[in-house]
Length: 138
Image (cartoon, helix red, strand yellow):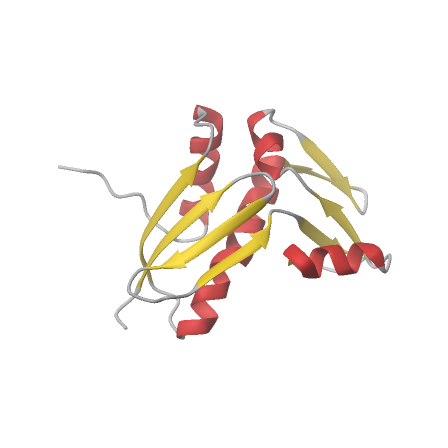
C-alpha cells in the first residue's frame, strides 16, 4: 500500500474513520482522556475506562468545545479545545496507520454535521500539525 486515503466523520458523540479500498471502519466515542501525572492520552472506550478507574481526566464534546473556543484544565494545565482536537485526531488516525503498517496519509476527507468556520480551521490546523498537508484544487 502506497499510502492511506481516509474518511473521517466527526461529531460530538462518535467519530468514524474509514479507509478507501478496505472494508474496515473504526467507530470511536469522541472523548479524550489524559492519564493523571503522565503524558499518555487515550480515546474512546479506553478513555472511559481510565476515567472510571480514576487514573485519567476525560474531556468530551470536543467538536462543540472547538466551536465555542473552549478550554479544559487537566492536571493543572490549561488546554485549548483545538489542542485537544489535534491530540484526539492523532490518536484516531493512528488506528488505520497501525492496522495497515504505513504512516503515509495520502488524503483525508473530513465530514461534519454542522459546518462551522472555527471547526474547519481547527481541523485544518490539526491536520497540518500532524503532517497532513492541505491540498488545493486547480
